Amino acid sequence: MTFSWPWALLSLLIMPIVAAVVWLLRRRRRRDAVRVTSIALVRAALPPRTRWSRLIPTLLLLLGFATLGVGAARPQATVLVPSNSTTIMLAMDTSGSMCSTDVEPNRLTVAQEAAVSFIESQDGKTKIGLVAFAGVAGLQVPPTTDKDALIEAIDNFTTARGTAIGSAILASIDSIAAINPSVAPTGVEAESAQRSGYAPDVIVVLTDGANTQGVEPAKAAEAAAVRGVRVFTIGFGTTTPSQMACTGQQAGGWAGGGPRGGFGGGSGGGAGRNPRIIDEATLQTVAEITGGEYYKAESADQLQGALADLPNHVTVVRKHIDIASWFAGAGGLLVAVAVGLSLWWNRVRAPR
Image (cartoon, rainbow, N blue to C red; front, side, top):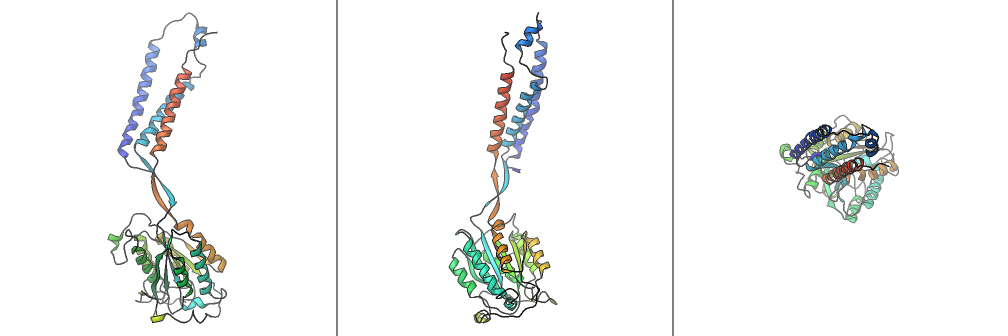
């Protein structure tokens, strides 16, 4: 909880003042005591209270003033609320290893079907963009609510050599920056791109292998973290050796030699690793650096479940809400109860 007007907490100083006034009144009441001829008449006139119960109105009054004092400082609570400006960038691996048949009929087909189901399940407010990556990464569909355009692009995926996970993350950041001015593009220095808190936009990286070229994933993750963009990673596939089999369209290669808007190249990462084996350590590191989460999927059902779980993380944002009215209401109620109890318990009862 934070305060918009923290200086207003000085109003809590009224508590010792009220306590002092109560103490003085009680002392004065003792000095003004009078003699009576019958203790029985006094006991009959006084309300039946214990010594400790007489302190309850005073304590409630002090607590009420304290609550009102906190409310005067305009407290704000941080809560998770639905976001109506979320952008989800799907960065999907289309390297040759996606033709592996360890998940029938092959990894690419299952990934395509899962992505289509995910897109169809979203409401019309969430924008989804699509990046495909093999040896290079390129924007296929900019963030949009046009589900048909996204599904068409996914259905037309074809494979190529290489796996550029880091480049896919950077391409996704630039796609988000193009529609969200609060997210700096990748060409901006880290000091200038620094953002406080998470952006409502996230990146989902689905891959079955290890980075083989382009920017290192951890370095790309650091760029995303500076901008408050979380990266959720999904490692898809098993460790069971299997044949490679893609349809003619899937194995046809990209027209023009690569995905449009290619973002990649550079020295290869992941040297010495088998690109057909998931680099889980790197994917977990990427998620940890950016505040995302890593999912392991070895079947179509697990992949569907991983994508279905994403909206629980990516369609909510942290928002500060003013809760001063709550404190004002609670404080006013406590004061009213304190005054009411004081009047009720101090009423004079006529002797029977």
